[in-house]
Image (cartoon, rainbow, N blue to C red; front, top):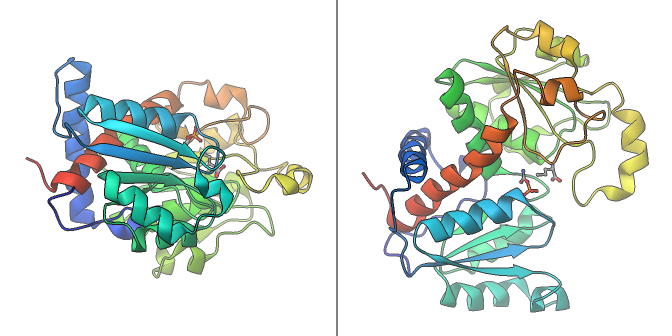
Length: 308
Ligand code: CP
Ligand code: NVA
């Protein structure tokens, strides 16, 4: 069981700017240890339960490998192979699972489901993606930006595409860490401030033209046109999003040292041109790898508090 006050990571704003400064520093230290093959087992005898109600490659591998590297172990559950898929109440599942493990990571549909689980959990719960948020991904993206370019404070991030879980989380991060998001979405797919949970309207600016959103941006980023759970809208989205493909023209109007990020999986020729994602400004592979390093720092923080 955890020895610290119970903290969950359900959305980006669950941690303070000061805690992020600490986490990002720890992630860099933990990454260095990994690269040097230095054994670091602060979570020996701790267990992480991972619950997936949607598909995953990066989230599963990064949490599973990360937990083993910290000396702990992992239990992997999906809707199909557990009682979660046979309508066992969330409250009951949370009570049972959290009596046996030290930490829970959940990828699910509505944010209300993970909040409900957390309410009944004895141990920290981490959001591994919901319809509304993807905080671990934005944590990795910010870490990656800092690795390549230094502080993100005062910088401009261009979001081109769907007003989805990634966009909402970028907005929360901008409000908390003091940078700006230029958002361009097709009509009908806008970000919703109240869903995103931001109170300061000046942390983002809306552009109807994606090219204008990218002008002078320090980072250009996008995501799939159709997120998991929205597959029935696939055809309508293909038509609506046709002009929201990050191309070399968009990268040209961004700052000359602008980076390109994508949380992956990507669809070349849809939300991004191959020349951009496979081009010199793209840092998508570092971004994917960094999921593991930041999540190791996050698990350390939730279970052990501030380690120095
Ligand atoms: N970016 C991300 O969360 O990837 P997976 O869906 O593969 O976990
Ligand atoms: N917005 C995407 C992110 C996948 C990592 C989705 O929710 O499917």
